Length: 125
Image: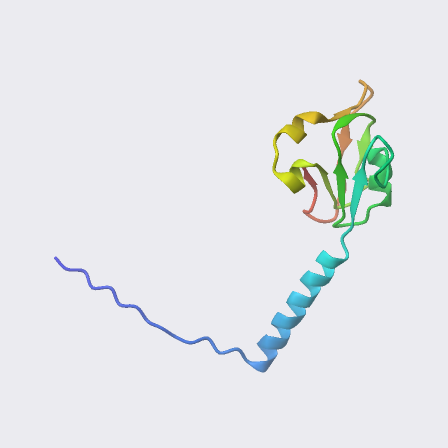
């Protein structure tokens, strides 16, 4: 028994309206990406801030709070912001940074609180 497979080729033609929509979609995506800020959290004072919470307070939606290795004795609240909170693993892909970057809530409540965020953009890595 032979099976015959037919393929059909059809050219997609963009109308003037669809080109405009595509252009505006790309413009909005690039604009959002260009306006995101990365806040560097370093305990030695050479970054933007020395505590994670200070970075979160400064951040706005779509920003990244990049935490350098160390033990951070604090409780972190996302303050209803849609942000990325990450170790250097995010920029290097090196798994060692995950184990070297610790948020220690000192046994006083949740180490990290994420609540009432408006977008599905929250990331922890």
